Length: 311
Image (cartoon, rainbow, N blue to C red; front, top):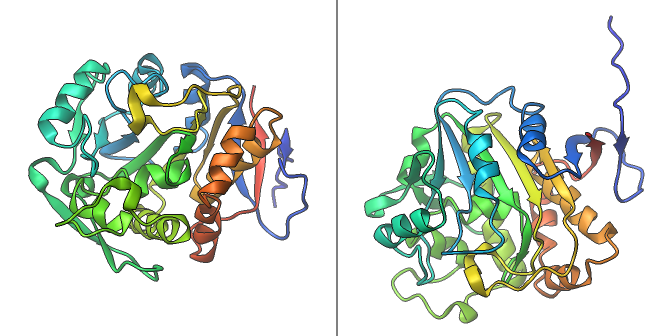
């Protein structure tokens, strides 16, 4: 019987001992295409066929989105892949497909196919098994045309969610622009109020978890999660040029096959940083850490992880 070699560089950011098994989260402090690809190749065993890359492509001229050159080099390493997006619930640059297409051009997302999955308002209802509140969520119809999903996320703050990691990227980002996102935000799709009046805190985090769970259940083992921790503004990329300037240093890239472990590790890395006061305040004031406990309660992943640092 072969003996498994010890994992080099393994550590837990929190310093707390964990019981039983732990998920593996691979991490590098170096934020560039070379290291992004290197880490991805450590978790891509079950990625096959037609591959969707879920990326937040951002509002026009957003200063914090993942650099196009880095994303382009990454996408080129994944055969038969396309970037996927959906339209938005708020009335911004990506509210409808025509505006969304123009925004994609402005922001430079022209190097590969970009599938606006809910184009022409087409949806597919994915079931939510054992969710908090939802029984199904309306996703962009084209989501089910893919065999695998690579979740490429700019980890940052968020005005309502506290932070936006992998769960937010799919839980909100794959929901159809009007019906699905209304469901995930807990509002009437036929009478959407101003976003400041949308439900928030624990209820919103649980709705987001329901939506993300339906996607994770659908893809099973054929989904991986990448969080790029750069330009760590308290604002989401949906705020575009109005996003707050980051007040903390870049941290690195974290990847995993476990959605909870990768978001948990990134939150722990933020808390371990000496200059993260503003982002921590954003997370806590919005009750954003409920995202993590909600995923744990629904068995979406393992909150216990080993952070394996790669040079």
